[in-house]
Image 1 (cartoon, one colour):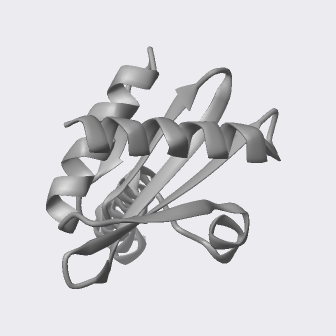
Image 2 (cartoon, one colour):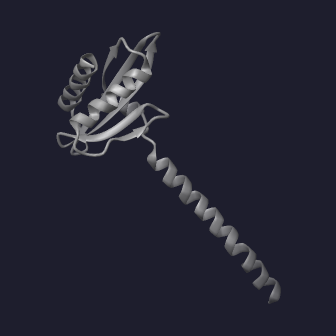
Image 3 (cartoon, rainbow, N blue to C red):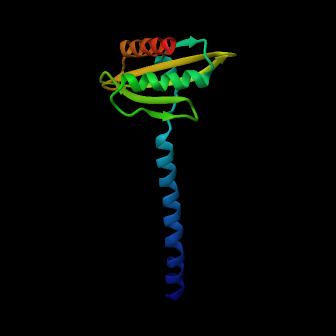
Length: 132
C-alpha cells in the first residue's frame, strides 16, 4: 500500500509536467502564422525593388493604416495577419532576388478565399511602399 502511494505521489507531478509542456507548446505554436500550400495557391503576389527588411517594415505600416484591428505579426517568418474590410488578410514577405522582395497577400471573407480583397490589399500595399 505504501509503495503504491509513493509511486502515485511521484507520478502526479511528472504527469502534470508533461501536460503543462504540451499546453505550452500548443500556446506557442498557436502564435505562428503558417504559410501553407493553400496560401500559396490562393495568394496574389508582386515583386518590389526593395530589400526584404525595408519592404517588411513598409508592409506592416500599410496594414496598420488599412486596418482598425491589431496586426498579428510573426517577425521570424515575415508574415502578418489582420482584418481589413471585413475579411481576414494574411501577408507574407520573402526575398525574391538580390535587392528584390516578393509580397504575397491572401484574403478570406466568411472563411472563403476573396480574390478581390487580396488584390485590393496588395494594390494598397504597393501604393504605400512607393509613396514612402
